[in-house]
Amino acid sequence: MGHHELISPRSPRVAAARRLARRNFRTKERRFIAEGPQAVREAVEHRGAQGATLIELFATVEAAERYADIVEAALLAGARVHYASDEVLADVSQTVTPQGLVGVCHFLDSPFEEILKAGPRLVAVLAHVRDPGNAGTVLRCADAAGADAVVLTDASVDLYNPKSVRASVGSLFHLPVAVGVPVEQAVEGLRAAGVRILAADGAGQDDLDAELDAGTMGGPSAWVFGNEAWGLPEETRALADAVVRVPIHGKAESLNLATAAAVCLYASARAQRAPGGCRSVTPS
Figure (spheres, rainbow, N blue to C red):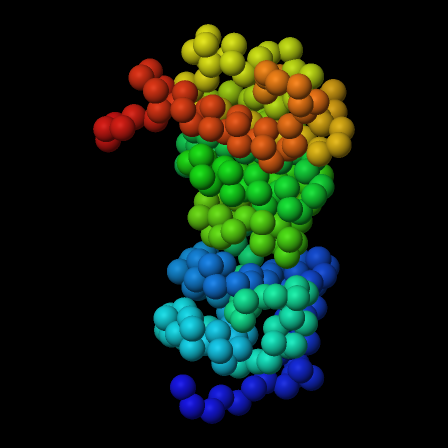
């Protein structure tokens, strides 16, 4: 591959990327970091309102050879590619092993109104989720279950926290995500769009199995997920059409947030795809 000029650790480009580890800089510049080949490949292919999502790519020479297709696609998409040492990549990504590729990306969240206009049928609302790893994992679950959108309320963690981005394993680039929406506004908007609001809560009076047996889950639904430690506050539960618990059939005391979210979202996905559900397999 020949000799490549390595960017200096003291370069202003490196300093600017490093700053994105902090939320106030991310918010001000509306940029975030995506690391590793999978996330960077998704970023290269993603286009938002501002055009190409990937702005810059930092790559070690070894990674640039291994993932030559990604580097080539990044250049074709108009991104600037900088060759860098492992130390620079670790510095920019704030991780010990960033796998040789780190991208600087434009924010890609969608306005909540756009999500409503699209007539969503399955939505995950993260109402009070504070752990970035959990937020990213729930986003990944929502994507896998075929959800139409994810909403992070103003009381939840920053979508662009590097740990959230990492835990989403590329799903951040796959489906519309709205951020900073007050939970009341999220619920009112979704309900007005014909979506049934289900609050997931370990102490819920409705059992998920009973809901499935009753055939009430085939229509458009939004699941509201709460805090890892203390669940959903009473005033949020009161906004829902039903407060649903995942039944515990064995001796486990409870399920963690991301696991419960996966069970709930897949239950809705199955009900919507069953006969009489709202997701038609033939074009409507």
